Each structure stands twice: as C-alpha cells, then as structure tokens.
Amino acid sequence: MPVVSASTDIHETLALLTSHLHPNANHKENLGFLKDVFSEKSLGYLMKIHEKLKLYEKQSPTPVFHSASCLADDLSEELQNGLLEEDERELLLLLGTPHLKAVLSAHDTVAQKNFDPVLPPLPKDLDHELDEESVKIVRLVKNKEPLGATIRRDESTGAVVVARIMRGGAADRSGLVHVGDELREVNGNLITHKRPDEISHILSQSQGSITLKIIPAVVEDDKMKESRVYIRALFDYVPLEDRAAPCQEAGLPFKRGDILQVVSQEDATWWQAKKVGDSNLRAALIPSAHFQERRLRYRLKTSSFPLCASPNVIKYHPAHADEVDYTKDGAGTRRSFRMKRERQSSPGDDFYDFHIYEEVALYVPRPGDRPRLVVLLGGWRRTTTRSGAEGFSVFCSGSLGSRTAELKQKMIADKPKIYGLAVPHTTRPRKSHEREGVEYHFITKAHFQADIHNGKFIEYGEYKDNLYGTGLESIHRTLLQNKMCLVDVQPEALKVLRTSAFKPFVVFVRPSLLESEMKSFSSCSSLVSVAVTEHDLQDMRQSAEQLEQRYGHLLDHILVKEETSGAAAQLDAVLERLRLEPQWVPASWLRT
Image (cartoon, rainbow, N blue to C red; front, side):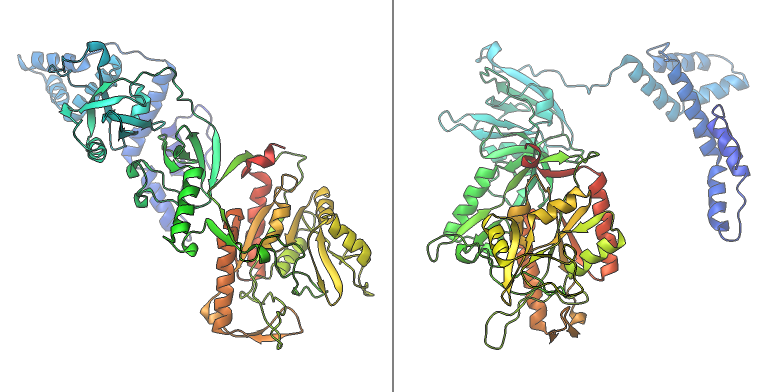
C-alpha cells in the first residue's frame, strides 16, 4: 500500500492508491471497477475543488463584491462592444453559460446573507372596522409539512379559534400564533362561515406563504415549555382511523413498544408527543391515557368491539387468575398444580386491566451495577388424564415447544462466568448423585411452608406430596456473583419480579409452529410419548397468542425458538447489548 503523510492532498492520495491496485484472479472484476472509478477525471476535479474549499474555509474568506452577477453582466456588455481577441471571446462565452450564472447568483445570495423567502406585500384591503392594535396579520411559510395547529369553533361566540399549537411545527416556530387566537381570514378569504374541518383542509392544502388575519387572545403567561416525559406505548394507534381525533393529519401513528416523548399534557384529552429516534421535530397528537381508557371502557360497556380485538384490554377472572402449572422433577419436566394465591372476589366478578402507556426512563449500565435479571417465558400446552383431571404441561422437543429449560442450560454451559441460574428448593429427599445447592436446596416441609408464609418464593407448588419452588434469595445470590440470572417462570411471577431490585429483562421464547412439524415425538420427559395432531398445534398457537395478548406489554424481546444452539446464539447477542447499551425501563425503577 502507498505511504501517505498528513500533508498529502486527497487527489494525490487517490492517484497513489490507483497505481497500487493490481487485480488478481479472485478479485479482478471488483478491483478493475474500483480502478476505473478512481481514475475518473471528474472525481479528481471534485477532490481538487474540495481541497480548495477547505483551504478557503481555514482562511475565513469574506466576499469582495456583493453583486458578482451585475459585475459579470457589465463585463459581458463591455466585451460585446469591441473587437475581441481569442481569450476575450472565450471569456465572453464562459460568462454566458447557465452554470456560471448560477454560481454567481449563489455567491451573491450568500454574500448578502439573504436566506429568507421573499414574502408578498401586505394586503391593502385590511378590515378598517377593527382597531389596528387588535388585528394581527401573520405570514407563515410552510412546505409539505402540516401547519402545526388545530382549530375549533367556540361554542359561546361561534368564533373559529386556535385550539392547540403543535410543538416544533411551523406555527410554533414562528412564535406568532397562540392558543385562543381567533382566526378571521386565510389568504384574504373570510373563513368565519366555514366549518373547522373545511378550514383545516384549506390550511393543509396551502403551500408556500400563508397569510392569516388573527384577533390575538389575551394571554397572561406563555406556558409553551417542553416537558421531558417519556412513555412506552402499550397499544397500536392509527390516527387516520380515529374519528375522535381533532385533526387526523396531526396525529402521531405508533406501534406497541414505541418510545414517545410527551412534550405537552396541557390538554387533558389529547397530548402532544414525538417518537424517540424520529428526525421530525414537530410534535403530533396522541390520545391521553385517561381519554383512551375512558373510551375503551365505553366500547366494552356498549359491546362495540370484541374483547380480543383490543390487545391492551385484558379480561381477568379473579377466582382463577393465578392458576399456573409449575414445578420440575429431576428430569426437568413441568408438573401441574395450582398456585396458592387467589384473589378474593364474589362469584362471577370480572374486571378489566387497561394497558395504555408506561412512563419510562433511560437506564445506562454503569460499572459496579448488579446485572439485570433475565426472565424466560415459554410456550406450553395442557394435557388431561384418563379421569379427566388436569395432567401435566409438556415442553415439547424440537421447535414444537420452547424448551426454555434446555435453552437456559445451553446458555450457562457456553458462558458459565456470565450466566447463572436460581437453584430451586424442594422438600423431597435428596438422591445419591445430587448435591445440596447445585440441583436443589433440600429443606423440610415445615421450613418450606414458613418461607411461603413469609413470601420468599416467586413460584411454588406440590407434586407427589413434595413441594417445589423458586426462591427470591436464590436469585439474589446469583446476581451478587455478578452473573446474569436466567429464570424460567410462568408469566404470573412477573408481579413479584418486576421491581427496581431486579430490573428484569423479559424474553418470550415463542415456539416455531409449522404445519410440516406435525409428527410424533417424545416429550422431554421419558414418562410420556404423544402424537402431535392438528388440534395440538392449534392449542399451542392459541397459548402463545394468549400469552402475548395478556403479557405483551411486559415483554422486552420475542425470540422464535427453532433449534437450541441457534436460539442460544441469538439470545446471547441480545443480552450482550443489554449489558453494554442504554435501555428504556419503567421510570419507577430509577426513582427508588
């Protein structure tokens, strides 16, 4: 490769590089193309121009003339009045070319610092019946962006007034339009007799300069201070489908999981927000949490949409809300039992949980911080015994089941210094090959029941007269070793784990359910073998969909499980970013 110094010009560097490109058999075509590109005269000219501009930039140049175009015209006229030499004819030809004229025009514009658009003169036919101090003529320049204001008709006076100013929009940037201003004319056309939607259409269709005649509102204090509230959207929103929106074009579309910055909550019904990461500086409208919940309750009450059509409305049956299948024997098979926590409610009493927004803050991992807890939620299906009683839930092999236990073990085996697990507790006797604190913590039934009473378990249950459970202390012990603790739990356990102490990162390990996979297989337990039917696949799909519908607002990542090694590699890449990069977490976690 050529040796270049800091003083070597760019075009000289390109020439040196081109001379050292020797295509070989493997890359002949690519290197030949690269050599042709570097050898282009136009590229060399551009590099020389770039170097000259950088040189002039260092010298902080100032224009000698502010009217180079006029000087060029005078020179052309002077040359045309006499006999010309060859050089003079060439100069006259150059001065008449469009490109040079455009360059000189750009020079004059910069030299005069005339960057603002030219506005037309004020209209002469102002309404003289109004006092001059009470009328304000506002000129705004807009391109294809919305004007950034909504209007309404005052119920008491019938006047068309500005309802809200969108932060960052053309109206906001001008500083000339305020909430409560009465709008009289648009581009010289009286609009007092028009409907607000007709006026909004006129404003949205107008391009370039817009002239507004306004009766200013009496404003005691300007409250246009941008807030710094960030929320995670827990539902999808499409403004163009929202008939209640005051201006559908001014709405902000978003998906569940998007992070929004709320810049104004002055309107109790419609907040102003921006999408984090969006380059658009103009705020847009989103329904407030109170308004969104209120209309969802109304729709449920009037049965205007089915429950399943709204993922952010979850119907609970309190008497059975906390029933789960949990526990493991030595082989890792999940057994069935009912958790001992049930809500106290009257028979048939249902209630709804509305997931609208969640306030979040940016959490930046720092050296010395405890690792975050990693919660794995898996797909599962139920079976029944011959007697009709509920049997045990099976995590199927292959891609039919999520096999979160297998995935967890793979992660720990690959990186034992980074990942760890919470050792469960049990009251069953210890087997000869088992070690205390490795496979299980072995305790007495009295001790186990005392820990239940003291709330030390996130999950617990009984199988064959033996108690099994995952304790909070086991999780803390792993985190104190500076390891990411991987726990495989039922979703209901998130009520206990979702705290500032754990800052859990929740991963849904969703099984890949393909029609071609409908075949017989052996479950992860050697005690049972089942044939997968179309009904089984449908049951698994519904279980995964129900989990996402009910707990989707708590999920940080969805991992489609196919084969263990590939899934482990994907999960490891996600958790690597979790260890190093800032993450949005519930704001309450950072306040304590």
